[in-house]
Image 1: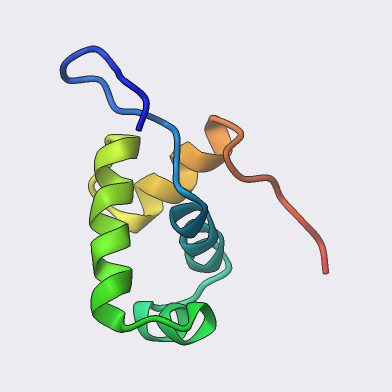
Image 2: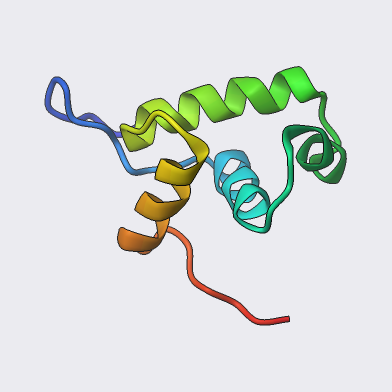
Amino acid sequence: MALTAPGRPSLRLSPRQRRLLELLCDGHQYKTAAAAMGVSVNTVGFHVRRMYVRLGVHSKSEAVAKAFRKDLLRWHTT
């Protein structure tokens, strides 16, 4: 994890956190995200909590919005 000043979040996400954020952005719930990642719902919850800390947010909508604002995620078409 990158070092940051006290009280400042680190915007560096692990590959799993980034994948989870992509799934949440695509509308997945924790259960379907867990199935897509091949992990338990509890593991998804762990990654979500760590991701919120790193992004300095408190909700899924804040996390998704910040990810787009900071270019951590990009819009894609299927």
